[in-house]
Length: 376
Image (cartoon, rainbow, N blue to C red; front, side, top):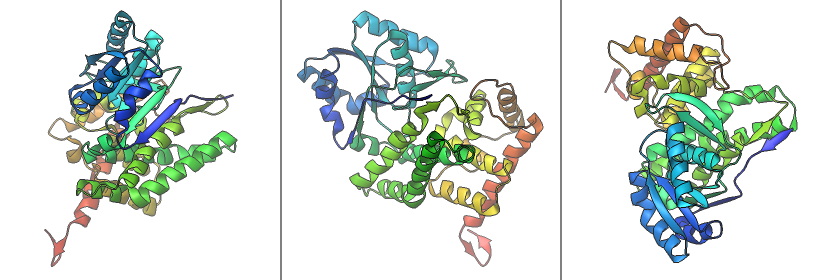
């Protein structure tokens, strides 16, 4: 049986936040709004004005931590005390994940308002749960996706370009992590996902870096930016929405590394897609892909300005190997759906990551402009 969990409505356009009050009023008369300081500053006034103008009572709940079970229950309690009809998440992935979990616990619908597009969390039915220190615990399968997504592309475009780059890397993972597995199956479900991952890859490779580079240079093409945002949220979210009882669901390679290496505190400073890019290079080395494919991965992640070395990830120092071993131990102890289905020892994981750093460093060195054979 194939199960598809999707939002009921997805609104993506410039100025969408100005329609939020009207749209939310169609679905709720009282809402609890969850977000952090910067997203509230960005869209809070417009959101509050729209809700007031449409007779929707509301309260803002500030959440600055990780999406933990404890935090989700705190939001649940606030929502029940308020007698809210729905929860509204405003921000990035952590906010959407904790709000979706709270919605599950409180049996309330969730409306998501992404203020950046670094992941598809505003769409996906799953919540990635961490402890209070940012160490991954488990994926929480919510019975529903957010019922409505309000993606104001002007707001998302105003976020640092780093977020769009990260979201593009995460979107590309749908091709690199799962395409080979899915191609082995000829079910309609698997063929559909293969075609979708091809579309994601084709768009990002041909247009993604240019769109973001232009945006960073102050050239804002609202049509092109909207397309990239839709790739990062809609297409990538749609990719993870179907589940087939007859298909083996896999976590790929890079995502298990990302989750299990959350025990390394220094990595918390980098974004999801940034780590995914580095671990996808590691995957290419592990899989011993042809040199042309490895070169393509390096080129596209370089074009997306993703970290290709330990230094770019914020890792280094005399304790580097002990940190890598801590992550390796966490990965090898995994026995859940996000545990890597790969055959590696702790030593091999450490060696593989050092090899990834070396390959990335050599690639970047070769990219430096040279005068009479000397890098400048």
